[in-house]
Image 1 (spheres, helix red, strand yellow):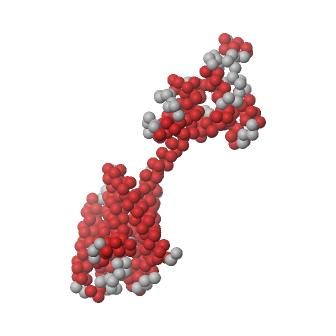
Image 2 (image 1 turned 180 degrees about the vertical axis):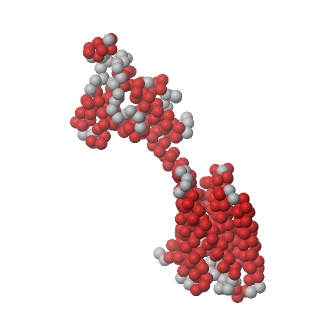
Image 3 (image 1 turned 45 degrees about the horizontal axis):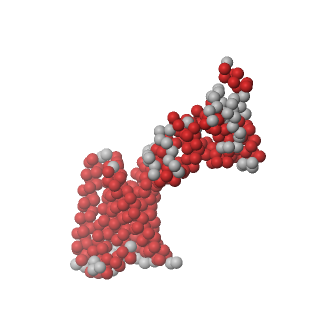
Length: 391
């Protein structure tokens, strides 16, 4: 595959991912002022990158749109994107006068480009013949365009990276750093374009197209960070809910007062028709499982943990799962003891469950099916235990 073909594919892919990111983040971003500026900046960049793609330009020209009009619109929107980057950075600093100065400067720059373009119409030799190529070397139009982008990308790189070092919000950190990396690619693109403007190197254009396409992917990624985080959290909650469900169901049946709601008939129903958001449900099931575990420690028989551990070892359980298997075996015996009506005894804390970490509970849940009935259940306490209990 040639560089030109790769650049075309990457460019089209970046356009799709940019618009996908914009659609996904439109509602939450427009509702929150600190995300609105970033969303509008990426929107302008998406329009400019879209109009930069040869396939898009070909479709528009076939539809009757003039190539010069496409190039002018792309360049004006590109400068608008660079200006919005500066306004976004200034807005986060809260400097009203600087924000006003930036707005005036952006308006003046776009106005100058429009006027220079109108003047070039009267000099056909100075107008670019290619939708992606430069105009005449002496054209101030291209120098203003490139300078606006270079300034915007340089400021974005410095400000985004410095802000990312100050905040503790992980989503914001990754959004700012990805935006900064995207600005690096954009800066390289416009430096290459400036070189092409002075030296006229047509072979450089496919590489520049590839760079601006990668820049589009990174801009989209910076916008999708909150969505990706939410998906990861949802997947983690789904995983916890699914894996913990058999253990949680069996324990809350034995200790019903710890549960806010009765378990549904199947694990699939619990996942597909949750009665609360998945993150909240996973958190609730974790807490309820731990509370039930604490209650059942009053039914743990002497030596149950050690006996369950020996049983698991004889059964060939891996060494790193022996502790979880022993806990599952002792807990299963205690659960059955309570269900058959065995009297309570002095609580015997099980090792390794003092804080009820989700990892520990998931480890028990993994071994629960094979260890829940591993130990025999005694519905009557031993004589020594009865004597101790009476005293």
